[in-house]
Amino acid sequence: MKDLKHLIYFESLLEEANNELIQKAQAEGKKCIGNICYQTPEVLMELDGVFSSRLRAPRTGGFEMATYYLTSFLCEYSRAILERALEGGFNHLDCLLVPDGCTMINRCVENMELLNTIDKEGFFYKYLEVPMKCDDNALNLLTSESRSKILEPLHENFGCDISDDALRRAVERYNKLCRLINEIGDFRKEENPRITGYEFHVICMCTYVCPKDLLIPYLEETLEELKTREPDEKPPYRVRVALVGSEVDDIDLVKLIEDAGALVVADRFCYGSLPGRKEIELNDEEDVLRQICRHYMVNSQCPRQMNLEKVHGRKEYIAEVAKEYGADGIIFEQMKFCDPWAYERATGAFDMREKYNYPVLTIDRPYAVGISGQLRTRVQAFVESVEIKKLGGK
Image (cartoon, rainbow, N blue to C red; front, side, top):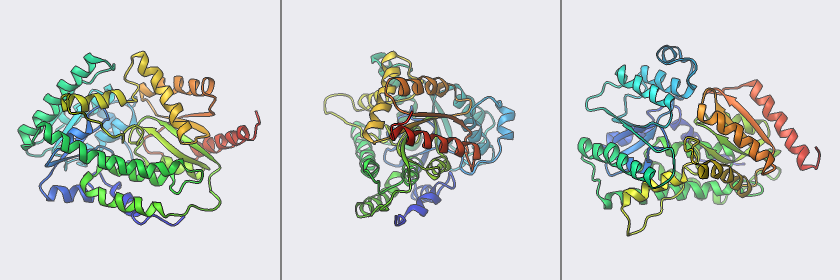
């Protein structure tokens, strides 16, 4: 296929945490709000005068300093973030809003604060208590925490308008970006998709780390380009897979999978679009903040939510996504030492095989995959097994 016009530019935006668009937005006077997890409602950090950027540590090498302060048994994402903070890689942030999504992230950010890794005038941290269930009590908690730990601090420190009208404007802008990403992602449903999983992953990740208003013109142009893009007559991929699991901000992982012959047609993982780029629906009767918090609570697919409806619902959602996007198999990935996804990977893989009859590959992986020969071999073997099943073999 013909290369996408802006793909190289999108890739360049992912090379540094403090990318070109962040610098441009801050030069215009906007404040950069750091966040680290889906559990912190992203749209609340998209008010007038501020923008959100989700933390990642591109081109990570070792974690020696972070491992000293934490432990080698914490997931590599948390250690990579602390390592990058110790190197001064997040000094562009104006504050950091963090949920108690997992103990590893908590330890990471607590050490960032204790070690004064971001020595910037006016910088502050806020920690949110977020629910582990999905019911009215949980919604009350998330709404209260979002008001006191996100909206009020942004108003007090940066003068943000936090009225219902301001929240509705933020949702409108957010939904515009979601519509663009979803239209781009829908091309993956085609029998011979005109966009690869790698290309979509790069584009989608940019929406999490860049100022959205500055990124939208590039997304609009890319969408128009894709409408007339012709896919290769003979697809270079042998099977279609849904990639499911924990935090994936390493573009090399999707590239490795696709180089091994499996087209990634669905991205059900942290930093993915399913359900991370689902539009927020608002009505005119209920409190706007409560509606926003309900959206994040109900649509969350994170294994930290433990009521049975959510436990079973996550498996059903994966099966629905796999069917909708025409996946032949499912790859469950889990970052090493990620406790929530360790259990979810085991139970999810079992259900996908036994209940939904999907071929499943489960992998645990480092934060930065690089050119792992072992992982490539496993994916190649999985591709062959899926091909055999498609041909009616055992």
